[in-house]
Length: 293
Image (cartoon, rainbow, N blue to C red; front, side, top):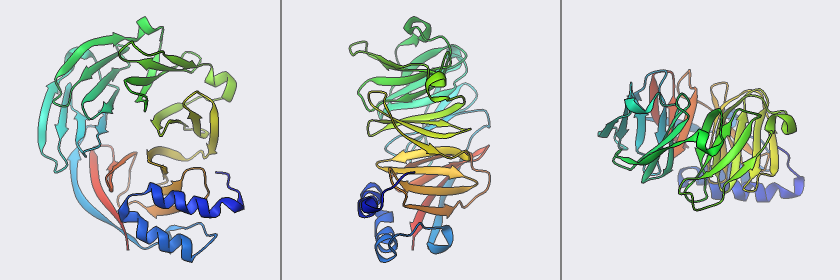
């Protein structure tokens, strides 16, 4: 990421303000007592506290809400677990086709996306079905492959593989939709495997190139060139990237970062909420707390 020297102090303030309290004291000491330094794992003292595991089948998907409730699909069923790992609700989804993604619009609304059926279906916080499903063909979307929630109320991003077009759909039909067209032709994007909007910024991971960052109007703000990113997470103004079984913690827009080794091997996805990291391997979601000493 690009960084001008006169923005170093702002970078550190951004990093401090964006992280949860468990990080603040340690990062304050690291960044202000050791100026103009990019930190590797051997210069940071930290530990991982194991908080439990939940099994997941390799081909299934999962989601996490703001209350640390975990949603995991399991052979045609959605299961919702609380922060202690206790099963709260289950719901059959076999009639909706194979689930490709679960997306939390908010703590009261969950979206079931089926690439097979090209539909979006909704559930409330007890996993009870809500409303009718949306047929994406009726929205002129031909080959949807990814979805993610938007910071704009009742909207969802849908990636159409036809010319790599991004569609911001209004779920209630009351607000105007918008498009970002022909990403392949304009930005040479080819293999988008993940996207997420946070803070009115839309992040798209092209696994062969890096992360593209757009504003809420579809203008490109930044390109983070890194061909080794496996998965990413954004919390506040902090970007977490999974690279070679290590976690890179960046202040968005700046070069300052911390790199820590993960406590387990084979991590393929990560999510973070309320000081807790959820690290997914093929068959298990591991729950850890990262503590800087």
